Amino acid sequence: MIAAICMLYVSEGFCAEPIKSLRVDGRLIVVNDKATILVGDSVTQGWMELGSSFNQKQYIDALAERGINAVMIWSYIGIVDPSSDERIGYDAKAISPWKKTESGFDLNKFNNSYFQRLGQLVRYACNKGIVVIITIHDGWTKTRFKGHPFNKQLGGPLESKEQYVDFYDYNVEMTKAYNPSWNYMQKNQYFQERFTEKIVEAAAGNPNVIFEIFNEGEWYNKKKLDMYQDHFLKFIKKRTKALTMINDRPALKSLPYCDIYSLHSPGWSKNTNAEDSFNCYLKMYEQQPSKPLIFSEPVPEYRGDESMNKGLIRLMWGTVLTGSGFLVQNDCSFGFDSHSKMASKRESRNKIFNMESICVKFINALNIEKMRPSSELSNTGVCLAYPGHEYAVYMQEREASVDLTDVKGDTQYRFYDPQTGAYTRWKRCESGKSVGFDSFSDDDRVLYIKKIGS
Image 1 (cartoon, helix red, strand yellow):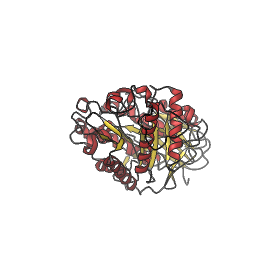
Image 2 (image 1 turned 180 degrees about the vertical axis):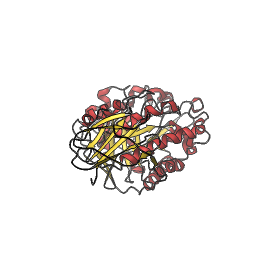
Image 3 (image 1 turned 30 degrees about the vertical axis):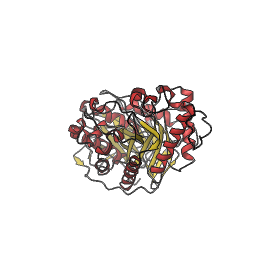
Image 4 (image 1 turned 90 degrees about the vertical axis):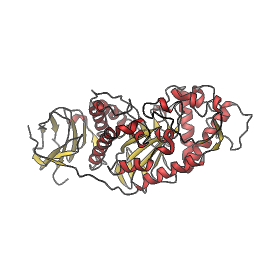
């Protein structure tokens, strides 16, 4: 076995260039003309739920200084009882897209301060080199319909959560002249279209935006949900060139106006294996048409339980080593409101940010436009490779073997610690055959091999 040697550490601090362009090229997301794997954070509904108490500038700075290149937010959520939420713990003042009334909301009147704040977040993130993924719908009717703006008891058109995807005509946009005599489906479609249009106006002028139509939605009629999302994919593309993303709806993946496909699976625990996510995204990678993939919120969400860290790391690296993006559902980010209960989890939160940083810096230093997931080249089952030139292998055991038959010439390797960002010095290794490696550590390691001169 080949031995590892002394450790060096990745320097702290990072300065990204502002984002000037964002596009897709086959399975790759291209930022400023460079193929890029998005590895980032998700504040989910906290951005809206905490309102102006959420320090969005401080949050973006915390990501940017670590080189984290993506963030995901939900545009809104039904508000039930913030004080009983273990992440918040007080009566937080949410910032709603719609004007509030004594009994609920007026869906015909927008709260302009909401859209101004959203625009500020997107522009600031753009200047810091961070892509912003905005989930537009559905406000989590699953468990929050009681406080949902579209609930009839609060001034909306709907009597049940299932009606959120009920439209009058999925093939035609509503007129912009509101008619109070419309039925609930007409009103529902009208209000959602006007909101989507307003979101696009507020954010799409910036080159760092991706619009996710929907988050999950397994509680809806599947046929209606697909027609609904198809409607909004067209609706958005009619108004902007910004990228669009669909979450876990196979019937929509091949649509030409769907740019990126995301999943929330597999789930994770303390005992998660890196092969779980690798095999899941490898299967998706091999499907046609070729589109970028993103793991868009690990489940369950992260709330500061450090015993879950190893499982989360394995899930992250198993995903990115298929060339897919990864967003941590980091509810510790609620702590960027100093009044919240999560504010006390700063140390745990920063450990997660650092894990994201360690991963994003490694993966985007590779020649990813030429590399492909290649489980057959390593006995670990988790390998991203440009055969003959470059290999990245995830090791959950101390020893691993890698098939270097395609490498002709001098070859070197080093190990990378996915928890600390530490790496060993380069060392020569054999090539032209299957080669064994020993990390001399019981902790997980990333093995990086490349042909000298590649």
